[in-house]
Length: 330
Image (tube, rainbow, N blue to C red; front, side, top):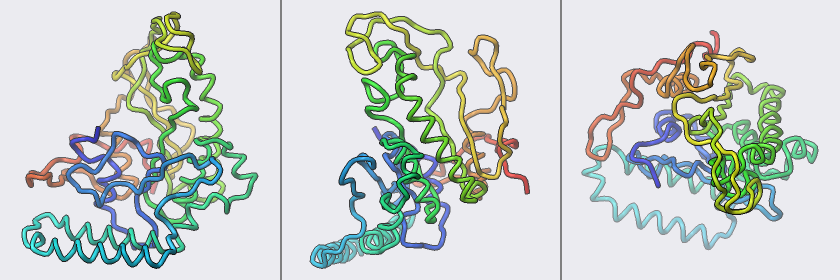
């Protein structure tokens, strides 16, 4: 289900306009399924890369198209759409049509130009580098993310889900889904290798000030282990009816990993009580998290609002302050 309000990166895509370099500005490598541009319009959705980049014969669709007849038909359709929309432009109060024109022009460049084809091509990486990230879906997603930011893409998201998670394909370790301990033992080696390789590689390539890596889920997990019957047998889950340990949703405290972005590494910011239930020290909230990322991307989120479909100004954040420990000095 798509959101009622635009996600962080769609907003940044709308506000941050860099010189166009033949690449999409916002790419979702296995994009977050419940994110979206909402009332900003489809021009601010991510360029979506689906499928397994570790699979044989994997190709990113809609880049490097060379069939002249197909390209001619695409150009004809764009021209027809623009001619039909001419009357609508007179009533276009929020410049959606102009944004869509820019989006279509850039999309055509992605279809035909060499820059996107080169940036997405993992075969151009040395085999040792691909091995370093892990010859699996998550590792190659992280490697593609590094190639994209190195090539000039501003915003890249990627989701670690699917079979590497276990039976239900995600990190939702309720006991009905997974044995939480078996689930973590199964997936963490893939996660650790991919994330560590990405961070190390960015530092080695001198990208650690420009690129900020943020690793997060939606919320925390219950400090107390529950014991409930499994709903089915599979990877990291016992046969149906077997009581196994799990953890449920817990919005009162969570952990997030930040790296790069010019910030001082090795910090631990904040703490919970001895039971791990509630934050007790250096408490920060959702809007502080968002303000920190906006700050890194050069956007002043104070008093920033964007118009929704009805023209009402909707604040991007409310009462958020960039986390000073995660702000690059100078």
